[in-house]
Length: 410
Image 1 (cartoon, helix red, strand yellow):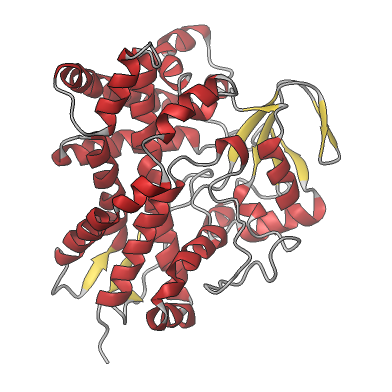
Image 2 (cartoon, rainbow, N blue to C red):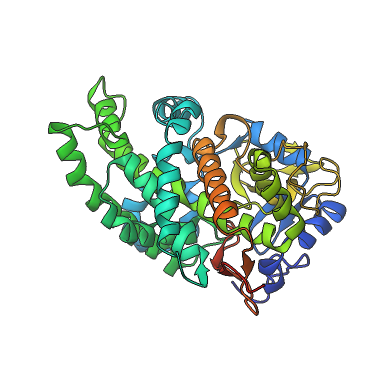
């Protein structure tokens, strides 16, 4: 990003990565719908405006072109496989195609089916924590928050467990692309390589499921492809890519961000220790307090007035979820963590037609993870001297590492 680009609200500053919330609060006070030169987009920060933006059909989700905007023609030709894959992502569709794709994917992610997975998720959390039994410390991200959701979504798809590390590496490259304000050529090419490897990985698995279907999501997608052409082969490949990417990114960050918040507020940790029945509401509060997904993008489909500003057709719009979740007009004392909070209508999973398909799964995984940590390691603390390292990504807020002491000395 050229240094000469004006950044009056510090959206590119290193301080923002460490703690973005003071920057969002200033925007809410001074310029709640603000055109950001560094990001080349309108940044929307108030709860009411973000909520309206999720539901306003004039703000389109069809936006894959933004990832290669301004690239030379020869680069665009090279990126065509990436564009083709992402063009079939549920995230980047409006009705009616969004309705068709979502109706098929929804069948695998109903709240009832996610509840049915709870015993298996409990067992997986137990396995991961058994691996650190007897150790003085644990690195939460690499030993728990990363592997758990990758294993869960891999099992849902029917993928071999030993492949999870490869899949995570590919997914990280997609997160870098999607979570950046304006991607560099290197970031776009990294995502292209990841998508090509994703597709090469899934094609033989899909071919096998056509002749030997199983009781998994991959088999269900193949059957949807074969029954009345509900899904094309490209849509199946794209959906597999999206499910694997989205199925763990939010949950990893929710576990890491949420645990750090609780350990920084020991009175809240103690509340949950004494009243574990508060955990479902506590997870909602953690989603609000330090949102794993900081924002999502839309594109103005027509000229329109929005939040007191005039937007032109083609303008990019950033709905700042994390800012909305700290809006004092919606939440009392928004910068205070309160696991007993009853104002739970946060936007951590979005709103409207694009409400996160995997929300119920993320909730179950987070609830079971925090329940097990509270039960097994009630005196857990952040390791002395450890400073949180945040991933260098403006769209996804998550920790690179979180070392904790499992059983501090008395």
